[in-house]
Amino acid sequence: MIRKKLDIKKGFAFVLLLVLFDQLIKFYIKLNFQLTLYGQPPIIDLGFFKLLFIENEGMAMGARLNNILPFLDDYSAKLTLTIFRLVAVVGIGYWLISTLRKKKSSLLKFTLCLIFAGALGNIIDSVFYGQWFSSSYGQVATFLPETGYAPLFFGNVVDMLQFPIATWVWPQWLPFIGGESFTFFEYVFNFADAYISTGVLILIFFNKKLN
Image (cartoon, rainbow, N blue to C red; front, side, top):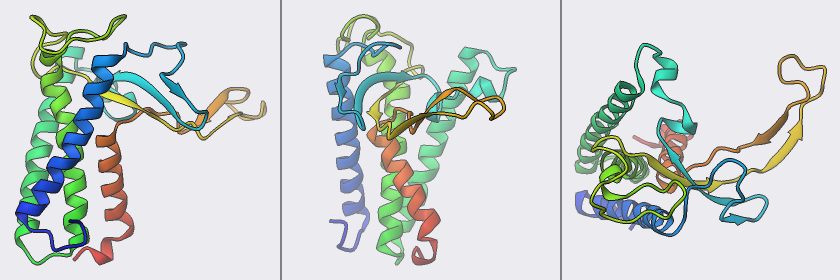
């Protein structure tokens, strides 16, 4: 599908497959495991790869909007972030449809499919998961409970993949961080994040081939 010319039908079939895969993994994690709390062992630990269950209330790498805009309270920050994600998904979707209709490079179309699928996968979590699932704190969540763990638009994004490639201790002579342990790429992410990151990297490094 990727090597052939991508039109709207093939492009959105590809997006649908990516979103379904992302959501199937998230559903499996939600319906089979409790949240991995700090200090608890991961679900799978291979050293260089760990499978966990983390719920991200904020942006990438766990950052929160009110860390950047401190005048926002938690409620306003979460709602603003979800609305921003919705607007971004609509914008990316429009860009994708417009590109699929034109004689643009297949690489650009493939890249936009990745980014759109990733954005759509995470917005599903943010908008609906609070209503679709019960809490995963100290228990395995149930699907479509009488009362979900959060209102509509206030769900958390499910993350599960971690690749802690290397860990070291900074030399004592370094200011601020001296003597502290550091793990390279300790961030936990999901497949939707991977789609977006891959798409953005293609845009950056192969921009001359995307016309």
